[in-house]
Length: 370
Ligand SMILES: C[S@@+](CC[C@H](N)C(=O)[O-])C[C@H]1O[C@@H](n2cnc3c(N)ncnc32)[C@H](O)[C@@H]1O
Image 1 (tube, helix red, strand yellow):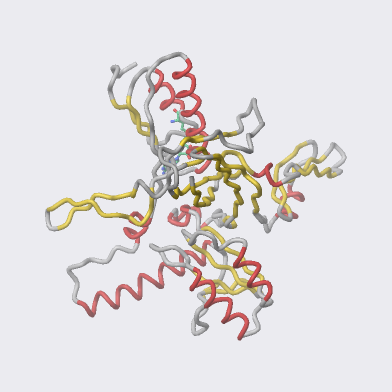
Image 2 (cartoon, rainbow, N blue to C red):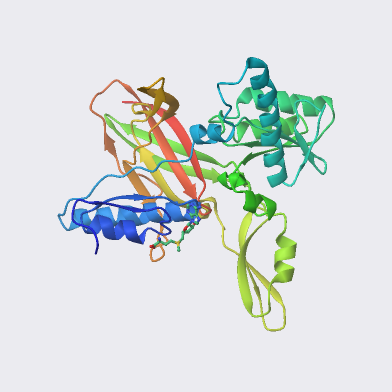
């Protein structure tokens, strides 16, 4: 109402994306932000639907990008004033590191342990390693921790990270099991930087999932098939949640790695209905980028008054094909459409991004030869 065609509209608390959808339909440019995973995911699906509708009606529509709070923003949290003396910088960085570990362990409801290298914390009999703030948890970090568990006869290990090197799962978990260690990789959610959420104990960590895909190639054409998705989400307080449930009501919870709808009738009799009967039930959305590693992600930084672009180490994922469930249509395609490559006899990299029903994403990369 208060903007003109071609203007830029922003909704910094975009929720399910109503403002953005209307802006797109009315020919405005738009920016949306939200701290909720579901909000972003719902907006994404909605905007794809708007694009599809506009395309069908022969009207113009725009491409859009989704940007995550990444390591540069996280570094801000650990920002150390560069004007301090070297000695002060070292002192401060130890303090900051300690603050960071405390924050993550507090959110994970674990205690800090000292002199138990390489472990940072403990929760009951489980030892915990907190991954770095601005780099992925690597295979080397996992091996060091698993070997230390074996030496010290510890059988449960949780590794927390913002990012994980690709391909750790399920291989590393199986290898750890052979050594007698129950290993869990858990994503540190962004809510750890929300002080109130940490204090209220409302921060949920999610298991790192894995996805298996099968590429098919015929000449210069390729398509992808989803073949497996694994996730081991637990909710520690499920018994408590069922107990608290009022008569004549229901709630969806995660119980022993399955999503269960628990209902109580008027007499308080509990009925459990498993919603995730097969692996594909965990998947809400998946998308394919048929030529990944071609678009390097850069950020523009200002250094001594000069701006320059720096490679972040990540690549941009371009949705070249996607399938997702909607409220009305719960079906999901398990095979992508075929993509035509420009050259024969070349190697291309395909990336598949899966978003599960909790809004967490998992990426898998494979090479194909045309
Ligand atoms: C009522 S909804 C917004 C509805 C939307 N503006 C519209 O017009 O349809 C409020 C949203 O604000 C988000 N939110 C709350 N605090 C936030 C914060 N500090 N930063 C970003 N998003 C936030 C919530 O996740 C929620 O999705």
